[in-house]
Image 1 (cartoon, rainbow, N blue to C red):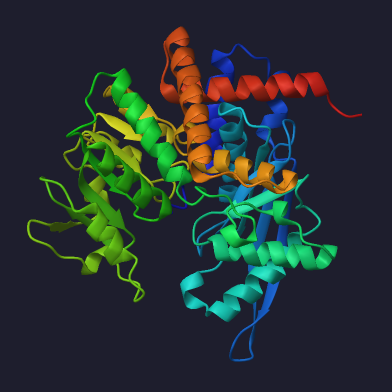
Image 2: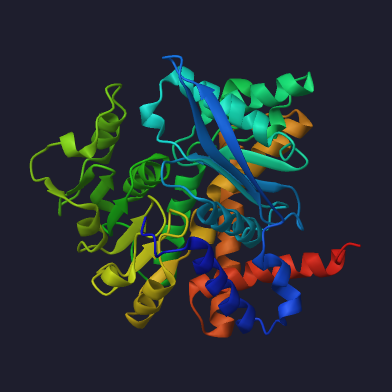
Length: 420
């Protein structure tokens, strides 16, 4: 990530724009500009060779005005406190825009998990959980998977928290394995939400979904699921990428074959994939490839001012958090690009996390059809509210989404007041 790019400042600039459109006084939204809590921890781990390494970890709670804080935990070597603060704020807006009773939180450890054995990763996770234990809990702050963390990691967190409490507390995290109280449909939820939002925006602008050319940056859980589901809806997936680079085929890629290839136990990447008619491209090439819909589903700060004018896609659906900088946003707006913003487009994960939490605290188990049906209902309702707000104010989808979210957060804070 570029050192000159500060995701938290990026978030603040968009917040200020939306607050101005809502005609808010600074007193109305000033509390949203600052996280409620920031915790930085040193996480010592005894490595397999007997040496001790200390990793830097964070947990940030942005807002609890509308309910417990909610947000993932990422393991990444480049993460820093400004990134975590921005991600926590985006989670607050995300929960508000889909109108579920959560605030935003986020956690991270500065580590490249590929350099750790499974045993070291488990030790890191358990010690990090112990270090942030005073902040988390089913009524306070509920972690979930994010970049480089998964259901297994959530299971370790749940077990560690439960050991300290002396009884099993499944509701402390979401995105757990099904056998530990996880929800059916949770793993695919973010990508499924991206599919719903892509389908809706295409319908609104009069583009047929069948035959629409789609490029997906990032073939992890979000991008891979979105690519597979959009392929099933009739889209032509012409380009995909991962950390090793991208692949392109104008007549469409075999998405199922690619996903099977990437799921191989040897840890294969797209750089190693080959098939007739498939060309290898860079991640930047993918962003500017000839297509109808672009889905950035990797990390933040991908669509920058430098490449925004070269993007050929008509529609951008943000599967990742913060993939577009403020400067790039202005250029894309000038070029009449339609953007479904991250706080709406990728909110499917937190919606089904909410379902999982509800099932845990009520000791219930929903079937997958019920989960997916409820997810679709909430996502489409949120899309319609954002679309209407955009049209009422003659603005962009991003500003419409932020206006919906900030209005809800401000109203909640106004009702609760400032303590004492």
